[in-house]
Amino acid sequence: MRSTGPVRSIGRLLMATTATAAAGAVTALSLAASPAAAAPTGTTAARPGDACTAADLGTRHPYIRTTEVSPTITHFKGWYVTEGTTGQQTVSTDTTTVISVSVGLNDTIETSFAVEALSNVKATVGLDVKLDYTSTSEESNSVTWNLTQPGYYGFYKGTKKVTGTYGSLNCNRAQQDDGSWALKWTEGPGSGSFTTFTTLEEGAVRCQDSVPADSIMARAQALLDCGSAAAKADHPAGAVAPTSKQKPDRPAPQPAPTAGTPAEQPTATGHSTRAALDCSTEAYKIAVPGKPLSWGAPLLADDGVRLRPSSIFSAHLDNWRLCNVTEQDGVLEASLWNWGNGGCATVAEQNASTERAVLMTVPCAEDDLQRFYIYRDVPGSSKIGVQNKYTGSMMGYDRYADGEFIRQYSSGRQDGTGTFDLTAV
Image 1 (cartoon, rainbow, N blue to C red):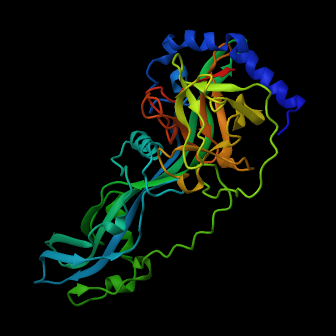
Image 2: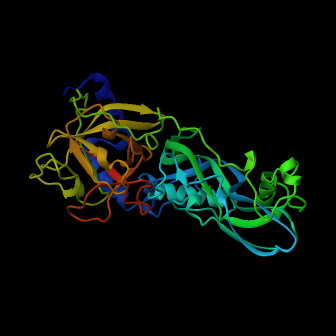
Image 3: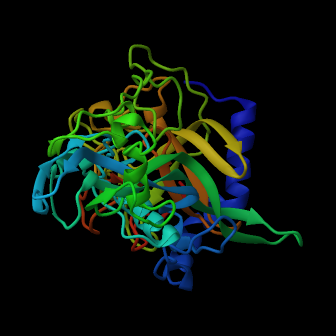
């Protein structure tokens, strides 16, 4: 490990904006009682440029960029009804289109970020869309309808498919036109596309029926191919052979993903080589504001980073250095090297997509799982939020207690417990 001039200068920049080393602890204590520790701002209202508070530094929220709503037929069967065969009919339809709920590359919808994204979609389009994982293929294909007139019918099930794109917002410092500083929601890492749908509708429609334009019923009527010779010909009562329009969609195989945002691209780099880190000469504690517990690295490889009290017996396990530091748009990116055990903070690769996965330390490597974004309060405050670069999740803890694990949360801790103090030792 070595220290270089540029890294030392970044360390001085950080110190200049978070107060001096001697005053760091005092700053942390004084800020703990400030109104900035209030409850975070509303989740659905957050937009780029909106104001946020220090309690939001350890959180993130999705925002909806674009939406598209398209009536879609998911099940269909052509059926001919003759005189004497009217009345209630139950028809088993064929699957034409399968719609599955997804956010990014993840279709499990198990994280709070994904659920919040779909909730924002619901509010944006004003439709009661699915907020958890499901698929139209899980629906029964049976349609029961009362037919009063003979003719060529399309029995159908359909829904409004809702697709679009989303971004991710983080709270960070921003300099104003007058030179002052404020906390604003800014666009951070983690964007992608989503798919969801409304409750399925079912029914039966004939070519001569008058239906609302661009409705689910109109889409079903279009599948009847009413102008074709087959639609006009006489048929025996019952099922009619499907036309080319009515055959199931056969989507092309999806290519393997090649690139994406950290939250979308689940391919971590290896741990085979130890990285040569350029670390700041300053060491820091990552502490709970105004309280004695701070991040403490483990001695055992299978243990995790926990909240621990700092004392002369901490053996520097509570001291961290920022390494390979870069800054872009006011956001720091760094590896977190622990002075006590010589490892770098990381989320284990096998747990990268797991909500509440424990923060660990491992031998340092060139790996995005070991890189973290640091969001900072305005100059003069030492408050920060910490986000894993690869997973996009924020660091926090379930409860304030000695020995409590530091964990990742896809949307952060909305009660403000994802905000920490970065104070020089």
